[in-house]
Length: 118
Length: 130
Image (cartoon, rainbow over all chains, first blue to last red; front, side, top):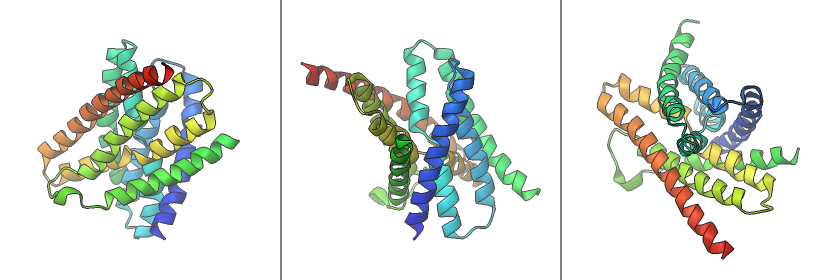
């Protein structure tokens, strides 16, 4: 049952990432991978909210491990990082990686804090 | 529309595999750094780079299958939100050095293995096109 919810959340999270990523990339068209960047940060914020709500394991399986786990991604993040380095966009690569981690961690904490103050 | 079905299926399988691997006690490990997520993310980065390098080089590679495996399966298998959560949990528990090391290992090994995936894929392509 738990894995079934993970599968459902994972399927929806992947579609959401693809659709949103495409939209952002169409609008920005820059040398900075804004799509994955925005997706990963917003996903970290939302996981902070989901984690601070006292949910049962099934709700967490659907939204936390399933949807948000799949919505955010690490493999594409690294793929884009290496591509930036290979295209001699070293500065952008470093900014992308460092900023993702800093904002991801702060975003998660913000998510926890936001929920506690609602 | 068809590509969404491929991403959907890939994403469902990737997320389930991640949760299953996360639940396994690997090598009787009992340290602070969450190595399960680390291994998942690093192996996913390697496979994605290898796979996409091959897929983009091979003429006529099915775009739907490519999206299903890359955006669907590998995108959902690896995760960024859990990585952030685990880091914050380490920080909140006072394991500052472990938190720092976890982030450092994630992106250094992630970039290194992704690059290795690229190099291997290039060698593999030369082999199959000869």
